[in-house]
Length: 333
Length: 299
Image 1 (cartoon, helix red, strand yellow):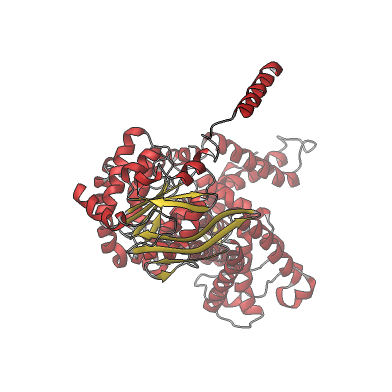
Image 2 (cartoon, one colour):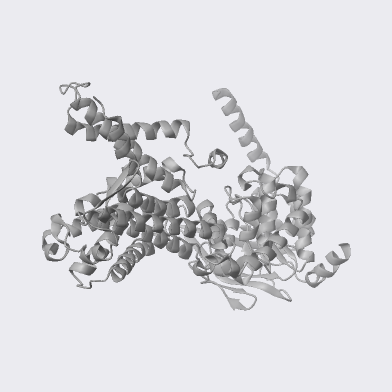
């Protein structure tokens, strides 16, 4: 028998869990980069990684047991990473940034997991002894399970989720305000034509650097949410393909729209959880013989289906859920 | 308008018609500017002065280096050597955005309308010293809201003047080529320039719009804005320019009022080739005829 109630409950639970929040924030960062400023960042996971490590290392290596300081260090790490990437590349054509970001994200992961740095970063095992001060702030009981309708979370999770969605709300407000301001106008103008903006007295390089930093910090916040939610930082989570899941979330929602990462991330987690759980149940209930596929292979299938749906989305609704077809058509002229 | 034309042309009427001649009140002075691409000398200008408050045309055959020269003056390209003074300040190391902030605003041969922004946003972008363009100011509408209203009012005035107010909220990407040229010109006025550099303002514009564009260029001069423009169309040059500078092979080969240019031997040679109208002697003529016949036989 297929337990539909369980499948739906799982899908809805994952839809607003801390993973989805991290995806929202990371995709919002890419939205600032690509959707508004036209910067091609294929290494967003690098920002997520430096944010997470900045947060974790504050407790374990700097020995400062303050969540506030840890968050500030995570932000600082993201800003430094953005400067490192942006200063040499933003004077060049857009594609140089794309190449550099994808490589830099891998460099961050490889450095973090390297054996010589094991005493600091924990090497391939990462960090997992840092969450104490954060848990101390938790007003919910760590062992209790809180439920509402189909949703149920442990107290530790619930704390991260509440903080995370408050953060998302603030970021949505921030992006909305910035993009209706003259600052946003300059950034969008640079996306359309950098030389036109320069000819009108705008320092395109400086604005691109600001946008890169802003989007990078959002990536860093995503990393901190993941670190807090998992109570661990695993270097191999920050592998290059992860960036493209953030891109997928953004494209699903529609590039250059404030709300698209939020809706895109929720949809992504609903779809992927639904497929995984349905697949597993189909196999274990015997509807699909194990000679065709077994439970462990279901996790691969889910990405096939995600890929297929992305391809279909590009064909039938290239502007995403919120995008405007009219705007999209202007590119083709 | 005619009165204006005569008064503004006056300072230049007594100048000798020679390259590098000094003007009574130059806004832009270029000295020993040189730019090479590999072995090709794209620009090699010894001295040029651009008179304030008049329309100066920069003409020359294809590949003469006009656009490169424009890019060097506006900071979009850097010269191998050379000095440029704009209103008395040395600007040869300045970047495009600082030049624009100082009052030298350019347009482009291939128009750069910001396609996915509405026309009005294109216009508002042009305004200088916007408080809301600083990141932290942008967060508080109260800081920039008042200025934004003023800018919008000015943008609307300019759109009306350029007869584009009906397109106000359309995406700039939906405009025709000529409308984009108009938008680009109007947008550059938002930056309150002292010197406007127009790179082929008439290229790709349909004849119906040409007259309107020409009128707008003239009206810039009447407002006291200095205009320098690159153009191919000699009719346009004759119609609106007060002074013409001719470039060929990177050098300035002639200067003078528009009516002088058509008679200038250096200019005719540059456009048509040195031997274009020399009479052939009998031997040459027979040789040419033989060539032609050979070609016909081969075909």
